[in-house]
Image (cartoon, rainbow, N blue to C red; front, side):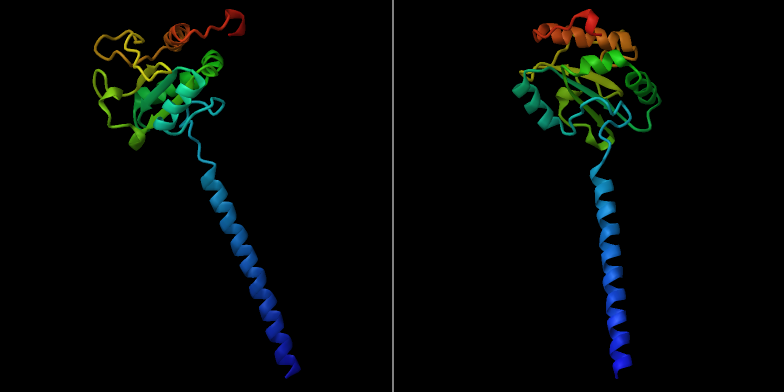
Length: 174
């Protein structure tokens, strides 16, 4: 009987150890899910806001213009823009004065204000801290006004958005 009780205690310790290991493993899985990369490849050094509604609120509260990138994971032009965007230290510096959002795939809003001249991708849109769309900040193509493939033009639009928001950066800072 003593031998049986000893075996039961050993088995109970073994089950407890398995339970602890299982719970620890589940905690690691949960932590991995929490650390989702909301940069979507556009640069994890940029302070991205993951939700468009929250971004408009932050923009108004912090009196910063809002820059929205709408793109798809499968799009060749989006992938090209992504690599140029994330490699630009100048865009990174300018982004500090913006509320930055990038919306990929199903995160694209249905609201027509995010499709001012069509639903093509990628699109880079600017809004003032008052929530008003900046239709003047466009790219070189008249047919796809908000497709801006050139980082220099993106920076130019960012600087224009900042100047109308009364936020300026000296060229020494860039």
